Image (cartoon, rainbow, N blue to C red; front, side):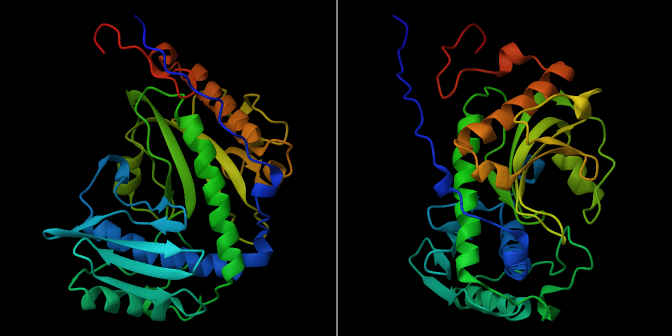
Length: 324
């Protein structure tokens, strides 16, 4: 008798669930928070065992903020959490010890010193490389007195967007049987990302600004389609969803993708969908899913992926066959 797993249709969000996130309204807070997440992320980088494609380094979205998830410290573990509801940074160990810092206006230099001091009081001796990654004109954490703004309401709005993004990208992830990444938050590029793999090796990556070549070559060792959310960066850039393929198959940049608000960015060399068009849509979830599915369709079709072996219906278990 075939197994029958009823899969209910997922509940959909409303436009009111997606907060406004205008770049100019929180630029200083965003830049400070970017550096704070790099401080915490580099602790994870220093302690977590290496995984393929650097999957040991991202942060993960929680019901209250962002977390490192547990990291080893001898016979115990510890984790560091950003709480964007109570606006606290919490460090907790598996033997019950905790330390907390208030999230409020303070320089990156002070934040770095306070985090490292809190770790030492918990008996955690960790050293990190203090030069920020993937940013122009980086300032070592201990010397950064430039970035120090923290608007609590803006930080909470940003986290709420990540909550919505993860929720929808997890649904998109459920449609794929092949190798795929978690939906995770990269503190270097300060973006949410989910990646699918064709299963085939990729040509050596040419490298990217602000990142060591060995990092990008590990990250892009195999063919991928990635989709994610970026909150904007330099002046004039607003929050957006993005999608790209590596290596980029012939014809990919001119492929027709959905929805109508999406298009190819010659500057970023990827498809983009403005966040503002998502939050104003009648069904934001469906708009993001349409974007992910259509860009994946272009990448997989033009790249000649083995789609029959890699795909399934949303959230439905696939009955194992011979060799599975």
